[in-house]
Length: 312
Ligand code: KPL
Image 1 (cartoon, helix red, strand yellow):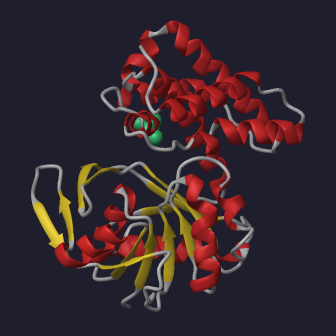
Image 2: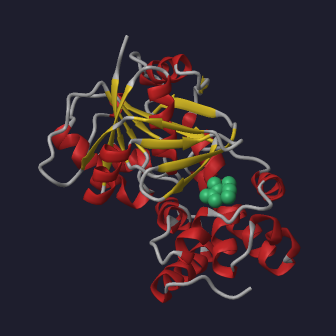
């Protein structure tokens, strides 16, 4: 059956998912922040580049989210906005798309918790993907390599599983999805990797593979992750070996510049609030001290204000 899916956030992952849906014969409506991007997507379509450089162009619908642009009726909505825009996107869903299943494919902690303030919990699924994609200009996306996508229901014991619906939709488009029974733990596990890598690479202008070579900085990363593991345990999420996973990801993504480093280099707001910021907040709630996360959180906020990464 043909579905029409709204994708809120037309960055790399939003564009990759729009392409995937179109490939599978579904409709995609990209909801963009900026009028120029919506206009460019409407005019030129979406350009998808395979890893060998082969170019594909597909037509997509595109609208701007905070104007009076009419939103077409859709069967579901995917959030791919940065974590600091989750509440704004949730408000858009509440007002303009109140009854559809929602899938958050975002970085960091707390996205489900922000959404549930605006969208009924049984409508929410959370997802993670390790497929690589890089956005270029307003309309292009470069596919960087296959990964794995997992989706799970925000309410673990829900009877009407939105996660299964999303998994069938994507699998039918040639993008296999695993349904996770405990997506909360998966979200935490991924967030641990981001907490271990993103702030220290961003503050010191390092590629992921350079971090393990700086033992002084790596010790800070270890403290960030160990504190965060204690907070997770207090919040009922048992995690093990998070720092070993950080080292593993530094190795497998050695040439990458973390998303936080790229944000600082471009003078943009980072997702530190959904990483160290959320650890500090939850630490206070559960009575777990988080001095290292607090310090690094403030350092990244300062670097955002200064508009640049620090020195190596
Ligand atoms: O997800 C990432 C990010 O940069 O945000 C990692 C895994 C650290 C890869 O760069």
